[in-house]
Length: 109
Length: 114
Image 1 (tube, rainbow over the protein chains, first blue to last red):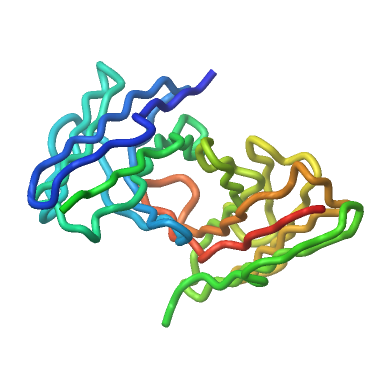
Image 2 (cartoon, each protein chain N blue to C red):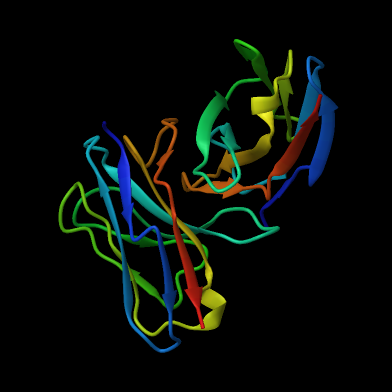
């Protein structure tokens, strides 16, 4: 079967750095997406990786290792507004997104 | 403002009733999707459409039907609602169904079946 694993919940301090990990086992691979979802709102797109390595976009970076079936989302200079759930999703061989359950990130002052 | 509009925002429905969730996008995206999101689970794909006139089944299609008569609209119908269909339903779209384009989401419909 297809599986996406990510931690259920993480806590970090305002101004710090946090890394949210995602491991996957899917039927084929056509890219990995990270989304942010604030409570009660729609998911919004953060990043896309299809090749190994690090993609940086402002305070957010995303890393991919296809051989290890592993990705992480790195958030720097954390702000209170970063409190949200972060969803990892992999596009499989049928170009369908397989979603993890999400990591709820709690930011403390 | 361009985007995806879902209606209704929320609904309480008696079991056995028929219900259609509406979804409209104005981005001229070819592909559209319906997901359900339940606590502790990832988004699960119900049905999708890669282009107007075509639809496909996702991971959890039973009890749901869709149509795609034109590019903009992608309604989801529950023919006879059951309590296990209580969930938050998200409609999404992307430029194409077979590429690396991100999916854009509507604000969701919170549906409770009693």
